[in-house]
Length: 121
Picture 1: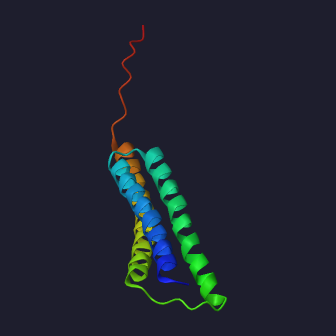
Picture 2: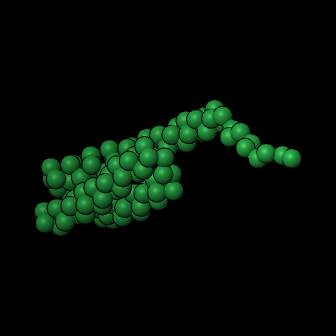
Picture 3: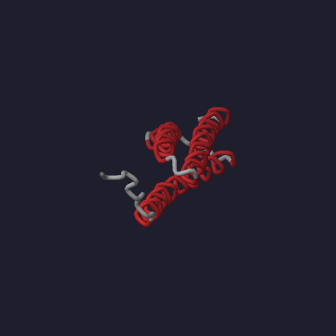
């Protein structure tokens, strides 16, 4: 595998993990607004992008496993780092979403119920 092919794969990994990271940060913003439907969708979108990045990584690993020599390039190291940190960030976002939901449930349960303002005769 030549240098240009490795760079193309590396940039594909970076592109999709970057798109995933953007979705994760948008999910965090939605969580802060307590818009869990949107945060859930953003986390799904982030996972779809991670799957594309992971597919590129898997193709590279399969090529290597088939016996093709792959020279290590710094951009490939960067791509792998980018992918792994984004995967970790997504896992943390899922945990944070659970916490945000718990806090909202506690807040909702501690609000006083509206008094019945209906006048009976």
